Length: 473
Image (cartoon, rainbow, N blue to C red; front, side, top):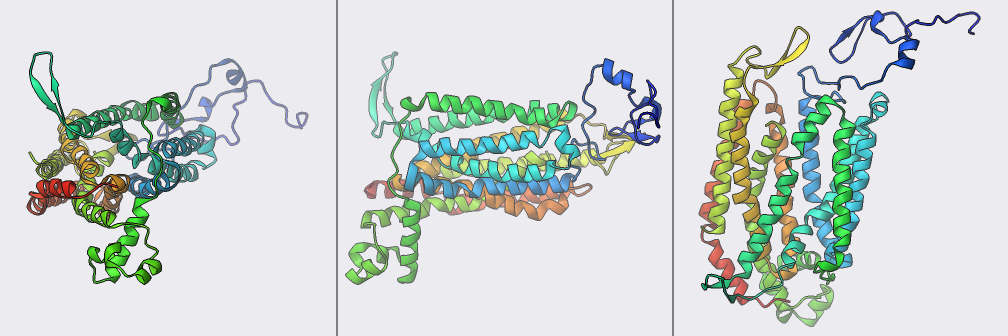
């Protein structure tokens, strides 16, 4: 072949002599590397492929598709904790469940990283890889999320208040519940420190590559698992004692079939035949705990609206009940600010009603400083402190001990239903409708906060009374 088609030394390595683009950079045939240049010059990465509106994205599916996939991921991550709670309580315990699902999570991160390398992008493997990784990471998340908070709370071994004398000579009462609250505050502080990682990874994916951006959390996960394994003997680990969630479902089913009364699900109120028929494995105290658990879950009914507001910021931008209501109001304020900022963006050149546009074939944003977004993140961050941290502490402290993993899993599942609710707003997640979306979410959060205060404002004292009445199993 070489005799028929002799190859010159500096002939460009290209199949057809045509012009081409390298991610918005026009190139001519004379720009193509020659054989000599390929052998002598250092090779570097080209620009990351971006959407026509200038947002980084190697798949090219657009912002609406990205928002839909993100909402699905959030839904999946927060619905699987229910199964993680059953596995931990019924079979292998919280610690072993966390370790096992950390391994599952890492498999997802490996797939995500490998399918983001340039060769995988060229072979159109990135989208299938992203979907598979999303499912696997979601499964891993389910086994971790529902078990880490209860296990963190269990490290507080003090169950009764006691008197302590400070160095100043002051006598104080050490309250176990306040200690648990402090544990959860430190827990969420660690989570939010980790949440700063997108500051690094988003810039890496834009200016270098997606695979390197995904490699960073993969390496950090290696470190996290090593800490978990080396500290195994220092942790308090309670063995599994049967899934309270499954028994809870059985109790509710029996109650619904007997005049919808939980009292009728108590073994003391059932005949011997009914006990055999319903395969009763619980006692009267457990039914009382189910009642208290259902009362605690009432708080969860209000949270899907909060999570819609929270996820929109991520994608596009007192008594405990009263404290959580403050969180909803702060989320509403974040949406109002986001709507106002989006209005000014739409009234600023050069793109006006579009967030980004092409000028001289280059993606160009409106002339407004990105730091104007900061207050929205401050508001939503403060709302997380009041709503989410208080909510998860509420779910842990108010729920009976046997149902703590289950109630925590149900609380986390409210984020999944928030993601489903967020699907309604996908048609508004594009220009020029973003202002209307933020205003609608602001009103929803405000109204939901008022409803929470109205229905649950005096719920704390009732929960304390019920906790004192119920005997723990």
